[in-house]
Length: 145
Ligand code: MN
Image (cartoon, rainbow, N blue to C red; front, side, top):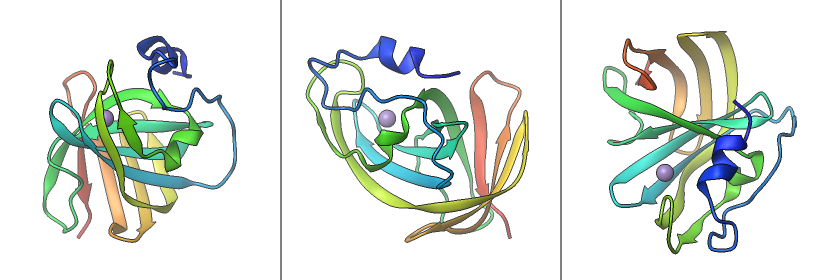
C-alpha cells in the first residue's frame, strides 16, 4: 500500500503525527496504541514491508487464547509511528494516543489471508493469528492455545 493514503488523510500542519517514509529496519517491532478517538479502539501495528501494517481493534487485542477480536485493517502507517503518543488536536483520528504495549515479533508465516506470528511484548506474548474474513478490510485477531 505505501504511505499515500496515510499522508492524504492528514494535515501535518495540525497533527503532531510523523509524516515519515517507507524504511526497512529489520527490527520486527510491533506496537499497540490505545486511541481515545470518537470511538475508543486499540491500533495494532506490525513492522512489515518498511511500514507499519495496521489494524484498528475496537475491543482491544486478546490477552488470552480463545477470544476472537475484530481487527479492521486501516492504512499503512510510517515506521516512526511505532513510538508515537500524544494528542491529535483535530481532524482525522482526533484524540489521545497512548502506547498500550510494544515489543518485537517473529513472523512464522504470511499469506494473503493469514498471518501467524509470535509477539514478544510486555503485555502481549505468545503466538497470534490474524485471519482475513470474507468482508473487506475485516480480520480476526486471536491468540493461539
Ligand atoms: Mn486509531
